[in-house]
Image: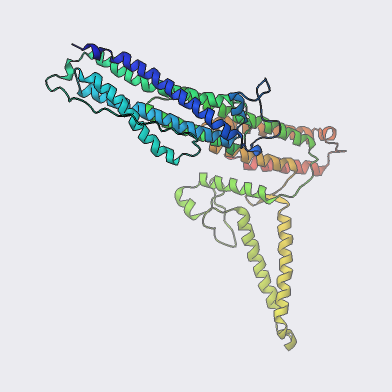
Amino acid sequence: MISQALAKLPSVLRIYRDTLTADMKTAIKTAVAELLPVLVVRPLESDFTPGERTVDADGGGASLASKLRNLSSESFVQLLCAIFMIIRAHLVRAAEVKKAIEWIMSNIDGHYAADSVAAAIALGAATAETSQDSEGESCFLLPYSLQRAAKVVPSFQGKANDATSPSNMSRNFRADVMRENTEAVFAACDAAHGRWAKLLGVRALLHPKLRLQEFLSIYNITQEFITATEKIGGRLGYSIRGTLQSQAKAFVDFQHESRMAKIKAVLDQETWVEVDVPDEFQAIVTSLLCSEALISENLHDAQNNVEISYGEVITNKDCSLMADAGPRKAQQQIEQADFIGVSIENTAHVKSTPLTEAIEKNKADATTNSVHSNNNKIKELVKSTSQTLMYKDVGYHMVNCGLILLKMMSEYIDMNNFLPALSSEIVHRVVEILKFFNTRTCQLVLGAGAMQVSGLKSITSKHLALASQVISFTYAIIPGR
């Protein structure tokens, strides 16, 4: 027969579950209240554009939600870090209690079980204290002490009753105890996920407007939080994962909408005049080539060859293929330097031909003049190549809208790399902006729309040629054509 004290175990565990979740919520609330004054007084104004900060409708800005919105992205991440440590400490305690009770129910019977469960709960609290102490040393910005006075943990009084067997305990009772024991940890995880999601929800309108790296700092710590709590609690956080996915999608949507509006305005103002290509944009093209090489090469080729196209190897007639994938621009500069070096040698050789003894004596001066002359040629050559954007040995003449579109493509690639879960969404956005760019360019140039929106007097063959160059370049960089 189950003793009267032991029969109360399921109800005791239900009380413990409610106390555990309430205690964790209180700890989180206290942490937020104590950290906010410290974080709000030193926000990073650079994280927000003028007028971007929002306050509550009452205009007072004193509410908790308003203070959370006024935090910079860096300060908000610091707050999340502190809350992460608090939640982890509570979940570690709950997990230790759960393990202890499971051991008790498997090894202890009779009247010792009730006392042992109480001891297990105290033991779990002490274990969490120890874990929290070690974690707290590495965590930054904890202005209040999370360490509580350690409770005196009663030792397990009594030993397993050898005269009785665990099988004597009712199976239904044991199942009830184990279920309530597990539900306590699950409830704690759900409460933790709910509080975290609430913090994210308060700033839901701000996060899509952040820069990519700022949003990633919040996204990544939330991912770490989800992984850690799921591992400790043994339960998937569907709700918090949905919240994070929703905010990530909102970020991608907002970034795309802002870029669509920008490219439309740029196209409407485009005068279709050729512009020089800054090194920044050539570097973007180089990174595209390197990424393409990594995708198309196998491991052996990646270590020994330069692959810059799908299914073909680009070779040079004057020199062997360079080892390791390097920027195309750098390779061109090397080839140019080789050509100029030969020119210098030939010029020096001609200058130094001994026609007379006087010329022989002035050989050094002649060589110096030759070097200066070729340095001028180098500058002129570099200047000429900056007028085109090089991609796979082809130079494209660019206009302003083409360069801006290239910059946007690199930003979409960054979003895709850092938010792989939203790759399909990002690809659809890229297709949409490319279609719009192609259609609008056709309307402005072939349809002569630029004469109305940007004030061109006529559409000349030069305008048509530049538009064709930009569209050809855009088509060339699309992978998998």
